[in-house]
Amino acid sequence: MKKNIKSVLNKNLRQLRLPAMLECYNEQAILARKESFSYEQYLLELAEYELEGRRENRIARYLKDSKIPLEKSLTTFDRKRLPQKVNAQLSVLLDGSFLNRTENILAFGNPGSGKTHLLCAIGQELIYQGHRVLFKSCNLLVQEMLIAKRDLKLPNYLKKIAKYDALIIDDIGYVQQDRQEMEVLFTLLADRYERSSMLISSNLPFSQWEKIFKDPMTTAAAIDRLVHHSVILELNLTSYRLEHSQNTKQQKSAIKENAVLE
Ligand code: ADP
Ligand code: MG
Image (cartoon, rainbow, N blue to C red; front, top):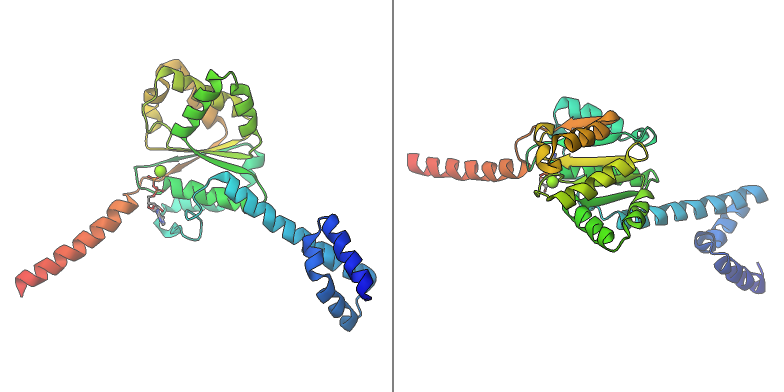
């Protein structure tokens, strides 16, 4: 290709914002000549590169925007620790189709049983599939909503959150909420009900949710909305943190015992 054509082409591709095409058109042209690609085939190759580049950029953007702690991924998650039933449920959830059915995921279990890690791992997989996900601790979410409410901007805040296909609310009920806090939380649950999915983790079983929503009516209404279309993951596991520290403790005491016997 003449030098002049190349420099104009580079400029045009830049102006058209086609960075992947710009990056690879020369190399692909050499390959196309060698392999006798048709013009259409060559153009298709370039378009595919551009699309793939955009997909990768979008995923990187969504991951950053999600605020999910990225180290809590599916690759770092040991699925063998899960009860068999939860493991089977997870396989189904990972195809992402629960989002189309606006189903919620509710993960219950003791502190350290892996609820946050599991929901974050699912969240990241959803992003790889092209969905938008937002991670918030329940506490932060409630505080942000209270500020928005004070500034008469709660509808705006809810609208901003509504653009996400899935909202992870981590540790609902972990911090005892006052009435005002409970009210905004309920507003959010009602707002998202049957519109988009929520992934919620809690140390408290439903039987103790009155601690969160204060009166029996609101508690029943909240549970009813969440459970209506939902998948419940019971993680009834011993704490991963505890297990690890116990393993080291056991190793240490075994070493001590051996030392005494000797
Ligand atoms: P929870 O939210 O139930 O309190 P976390 O998800 O925060 O528990 O898990 C506690 C710690 O143990 C985290 O560092 C997490 O990465 C790790 N962990 C828990 N379960 C697993 C697992 N199945 N595989 C790998 N790490 C795990
Ligand atoms: Mg947690």
